[in-house]
Image (tube, rainbow, N blue to C red; front, side, top):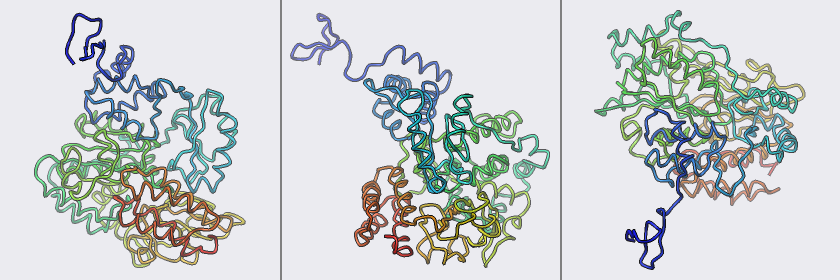
Length: 565
């Protein structure tokens, strides 16, 4: 096309047809003004795309295509890139020009296994009948919110309602109680009064070397508490062997259904985690710390923002050294490379490995990745010695575990117990036994990725490396207890529906495999040979742990609960 000043249009084609604007969606001045106002003096960086999408979503309760186009122009990104990132995450509501704007208030009802056992499906149906279609409130199903000990749970606005029912929801709507409840926690002043950050300062002053701290961590037996179980101290060496700029990233995307231990620690003692993070950052000489926290934890996000600001004011860290990032509802971002992609402002797609993130992580720099609970224990071990963790253990195991126990027990919650504790001991000695009228039938040892084991296998020590011979693993120690009133078949179907929803879609074996598995498992009688064939393909060919572990519930039910299928 050539510029033609003699016509009304700006652009003139060879056929003589003019156009006043370039091709593509045009950005309105109002949308540009909205976006500029929201961003204010913030840096216009592509890695902050998800943070800025949150600003728009929080303000307008949806993402209009005009605002997406305006944000693309402001960040000098293509509209396609902004759209594909926004559409990847569940907590962003994209509204096209011809679509209806959703109600400003959303009720998200958790339908993961613990909540389903507690009646979430009935609650979801009743709330949907009552509020959907009225134009003011919408009710949607949602994955685990990390509050399995108070099931069923839901989120109305950003306020979580535990042990939810219709009456509590109605009261919250009438009183406009839509904001997160901040629990009582140990703030910087109280933590410092009890010796907090003294060890960090001593280390910065040269009291010990990174190698000495690393040896103490290794001696304690601490392993990655996010689920992988890699020896925590060894990671430091892998990162330190790489020259140049290094980063530290905290994986706070605790999305495995049944898991709520990280939230437990952060809502009570956030500074143990923060000091542990800063000690690990000192050990690898990290230039910056990124905390990736799931959006389902609004109270934790508020606590961390406040306490990070206090650390900056006190001079313990420089302003901007800790970068708090907010997830947007994507389970896959619990996988470390997918989390790094999200921190960089992209879709949370797992990377092919090698290279590993210890060498090529955030912005292609060596990156140390730790889980929240791991850093909590790093602070305690650094302050009190390796015995504070390593002196414990049961049934030949070493260390402590924070078991997230939920389901059909009298007293669900976080149970800090010696590593190697059995599920029968967790039920009887830590959780007050089974609910009245219920007998122990089955359990998840480590969230849906671990499948289901029968009560007859309830005396196996629960720890890293103790469950592999039975075709499962401990993972994040998310223990969900089922009773004689529950169906193992239906529980497994719940787990596969979760994986179907949360598959990132990057690889065919996982994307299609989860969908096909749900259809096959919905039949009255399972085609066991076909499901096993599907499971083999998913395990062998999926890129990351989601697709590789998704068949575990299928295989466990076929093996241990064959009478139900």
